[in-house]
Image (cartoon, rainbow, N blue to C red; front, side, top):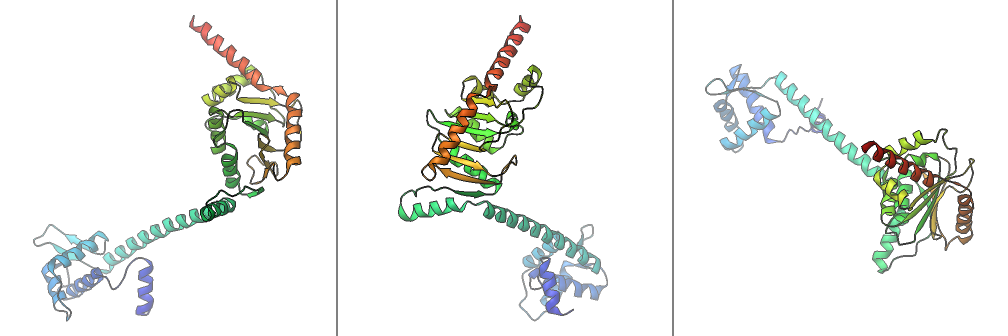
Length: 327
C-alpha cells in the first residue's frame, strides 16, 4: 500500500495524516520505541521539540493529546505521577474503528438528507414553481390553467391548495368516494381530511356521496361505533349541516372527483384509495365536463340515502340515553 492510497483510505474514515494530532501521535510512537512502555508528557514533548520544525507550545501538545484520547487512539494512566500515556497497534486500531464508525454515521445522515432532497424534488409541483416565477418577474398573478397531477403527495397538495383554502360563505364542495369515507376518525385522518374539516369549520359545505358498496350492518351498533371514534369537528359539521353524507342505494360508477362549486374540480384517475394521478380542471378550460360532473352528482344526490340524517338521529338517541342514565 502506497502512502497516497493509505492517505485516501484514512481520509474516507475521517483521519488525515496532516493534522496536528497525527504529528503528536507519531512523536508518542517514537517515544514508546525508546522507552518500551508508557510515556510521560515530558518525553512526548521532548520528542516533538527534537524535530527540525518549529517547536509547538505545551498547551498545543496537551490539546492534541486530549483529542487523541477522546478519539480513543491512546490510553491514559492517571493513577501515577506524572500521568503516563500509551499508544500501541491495539489503541490505534480502536481509534481507527471509532473514526470509521463516526464517519459511517455522518455518511448515513448525509444519505438520508439526500433522499429527502430527492423526494422533495420529485414532489415539487412545477406548475406552482412556474406560477411563482411568473408572478415575481411580472408582478401579477398568472392565470391558472388545467393540468395533469402526478404523485400521491402532489395530488394531496393540490386538493388542499385548490379546494380547502379560504372558503367563502355559500361554497359547496362536492365529492364522490367509497364507503371508507365513514372512516373519518382522528387516528386515520391525513392532511387532506384535516384540511377539509377545518374548511368546514370555516364555512365550507361538503356534500360527500358514497357510491361504492356500503358495508353490511349499518345499524345502531355500527353508527354508535362510528360516532365514538369520530372527531368533534365531524360531529359538529354533521349537526350544523355543513358536512352532508349520502349514499347511493346500489354501487354506482360515476365521476370520481372533488369539485368546488362549479369553478374547478380534481378528477381522479383509477380506483386506488389514495390516488397518485389526477387531472385539475378549471371550468374556463372545459365547461361541458365540469357542468356534466356537477349535474351527474346532483342527480345521484337527490336519490341517495341521507346518511347525515341517520347519524343525527343516532346522536339524538345517544344523548337521550345519556340523560336518562343520569336521572
